[in-house]
Image (cartoon, rainbow over all chains, first blue to last red; front, side):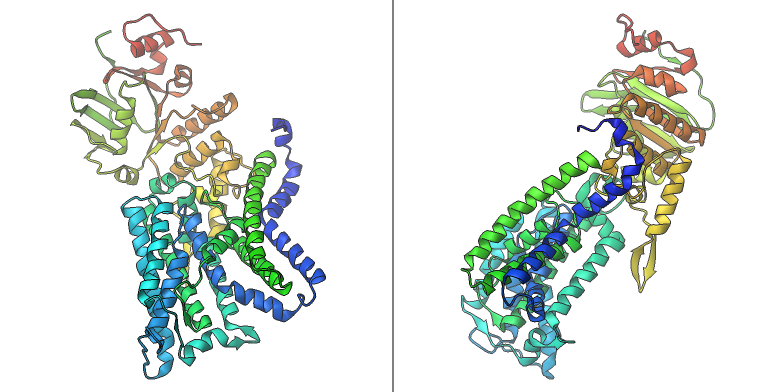
Length: 342
Length: 261
């Protein structure tokens, strides 16, 4: 607060301040660009279209999880259960259609019906888990962190129970095609991920519901007093994060051609890292999906680099952990820059 | 000073509390209070802590129902089931920053809960440009200067935030606004602007109740002063008929007059 009130009110600086704000808001994109450039320059074989497509494709699951998690966090809540929801939906898909061990072996006529059928089942799993979380947090007023931590453990247990602790594999070909086909030379999974990001960017920035998510996350009292149904908005945030997680689980099942009881363990923290790196504030009410995209891509490109360098995978973990801490530092730096200059 | 000094009520009051008593168990927070507020009038509610001001506001806002007595708004006896009911009739209670979201811009705050939308393939889409245009116009008409209505509310001063609330209230057809300690956290210059805002609201024919501890502000802005003491209305007079001394005496009871500024 070294600035006097006089300098604070000088108008000509407004333009450059806008630039500072723009930069601070999108700094994660700058970091991503620099990182990718450095990788291309210094890691042999990194700078190829195939690698980049792979990065986007690899981002699909964590990416879609991150969208749901972002909505939950922006609305002022938290959802730790997404990873287990994803695994449960994947396992439900696998159990429904697989003909192996614990599989139910559903084979409709014509066979392509397994695609919408299993997707519907997976999304219903998401709806059920989301309703459960919303009930705990909004109706019973439990702390969201603890309640969804409970769900996280509970539904991972359900995954194991559902599969009898065994891997369920072998999916019919129409489902495999979801994960393996390409459109215009780009994997379908990448297209789907991009579509999810675009759709939810639109919802968050252009629709009243998106506006309410920010309002409720910023100060729930104000929208309540303005007649907005705050509890419904919070409940919708839980439903969306769970349904998106379930969708990611369905995609993951098609990709791995089945599900294992420990499928996707660790993805919660990757999603968390991406969301925080992407600039979503844990306080709620703040953050953009455009930043989250960059966060997801940054983590994915680092993982790819570690693979290419044939480092031990635990380096990925260390780098990601360090990035989360760096992102938190960046967040607080942003706030102090804001309060000082803007 | 045991008798109540009141002047005869003029007709056409917007809001009337008639013989309102509010009991919480054995404690009477308000006892037989009658009070009227007309359109185009600023009334200051004064009184010590626990005098009954907050209870009166809660009754007006519909947060609580009086034990006995009635509330008449626009000539019709009302029983508010909730704050929403009073709000729908045009009664707004403004608490310091409570109705503002700091993390969104002026436009989003201005249109909170009343966003303009168009339908694109059945999906409601915000009409940002239209909302921005209206917000800019209303803020300018209200005499409030903000650098940009696309600025987040956290970057605004307390006075500017209050101006958003007042302008919003006027724009959406509010009739009676209650400001609870509107100047508590403001600097001198901002208080001046806040007083100006309130005058402007009054001049548009709306009724304003301000609740304050600050006699100085009350004398500057209010057309009428109302004093509560121990749940009773003990003074209700035109500001021009009051002196600081009579009012502070009414506030404190029979004690020695308190000198204020």
